[in-house]
Image (cartoon, rainbow, N blue to C red; front, top):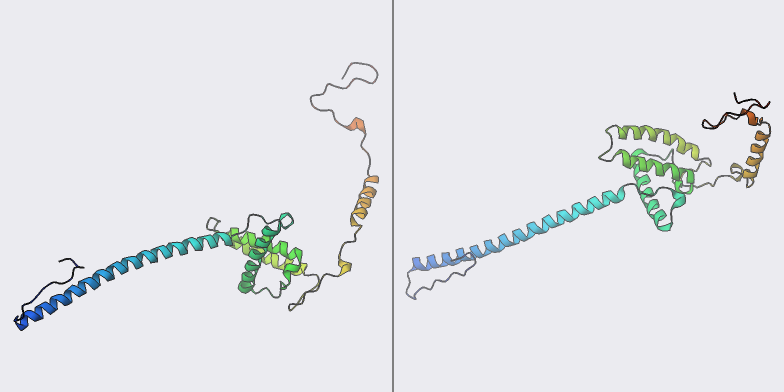
Length: 223
């Protein structure tokens, strides 16, 4: 009798009590075998589901880890709208973690996305962090990143020229911006600098190494 086969045992009407007890016991054992077989099958199915779910979780975590790494394009001036959107979301998430980890309220105002110099500084800092804490990085890379981070905090305070505080963004004052004609002024300064510099004599220019020797001005042979 297999584990899943029903118990088939017919007793005569005048069977003794002990035989009837044996028959009931056999029927009960048969039901237990069927239940155990079903339970074993359910266990195997559950085990397969758990293994598959674990594999999916590992693949998802790996994908998230790869997505959390630094984007390939970090030059803000060259980004189109989709690339800039992805970079913004990545950077905002990372800076949020950085603030929670190190407490940057005294160094970085919450309106930092409205300060382009801070955006550039934080973008570089985030990219360096991901590279420094990569599993393939040199063991002292995190320490070097922390040293760079300490200098970066000083620069972040310097970039906050309008002193934004407590969630209040203060646009930089107009007297702190370059005038519209700054390029013309710069070219005028260049011209004034060049005017005072001597023009080198053409005779002082050395001849190329493969050029023939110059002729004597008096008509003689070359030296």
